[in-house]
Amino acid sequence: MLYVKDILRPVHVEWKNAFPEQVWCKIKGTGNNNLFVGVCYRTLSENVYGHGSHEKLRDLFLEVCDKNFVLFGDFNYRDIDWASNCCVNNASAESRLFLDCVNDCLVTQHVDFLTTDRSMLDLIFSKEPEIVRDVQDLGYFGSSDHKLMCCSLATDVTVDRGNKSTMKYDYNKMNRTGIEAELRSTDWDEVCAGSVEESWG
Image (tube, rainbow, N blue to C red; front, top):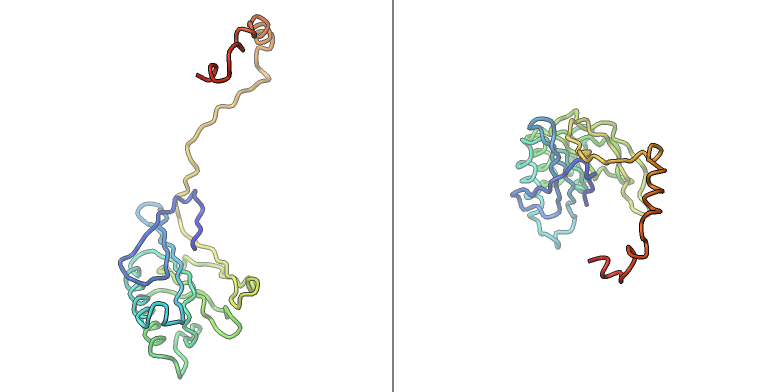
C-alpha cells in the first residue's frame, strides 16, 4: 500500500512492465520536475508469479531509470552486499543480474543497516542521489521480522492547500437592537404554520 497526503495531489501511475507487486503515484513538482514514488515487493515463492519475476523487476528499473523516482520495497536479495556494492561469493545469478541492472541504471540504494536479523532485504532506491536523506531504523514492527524505516525526501513538490475563502461574521459588531426589533415584529405563528414537509418545499 502507498499512502500520500491529499494536499500533494498524487496521481496513480501504471508502467508498461509486468512486474506484479508494485504501486506508484506521481506528485507534481515545480516546473516539469515531477516525482514518481513507488513501493514494491518481490516474493521469494516462485509458485506465486513464477521465475520470471526477476526479469520483470529488472524491466521495471529499466523503465523508470530516466525519471525522477523513489522506490521503496522488500526486494529479497539477501546475497548482495550493498555497502561494498557487490555480491557475496555464492550469490545467485539473479542477484548478480539485479545488481548489474541497478548499476547500469545509475540509481542509488540508500539503506545502510540490516532490515532483518541477518539481511538487508528492504531497500530504498532513487534516481537522484541527494533526494533521499536521513534514513532511520525504527526497530521491528510488531511481531514482524522486518524493521520499519523512515526517511526524508528533499524535493520541491506542489502543495495544494486550496483557494477556498470562508466568510466569517463578526457578531460583536451586529445591530443587536435592530435584530431584536425584527424578531419581535415577526408573526411566528404564521411562519411556523403547516407541516415540516410543506415548509421544506
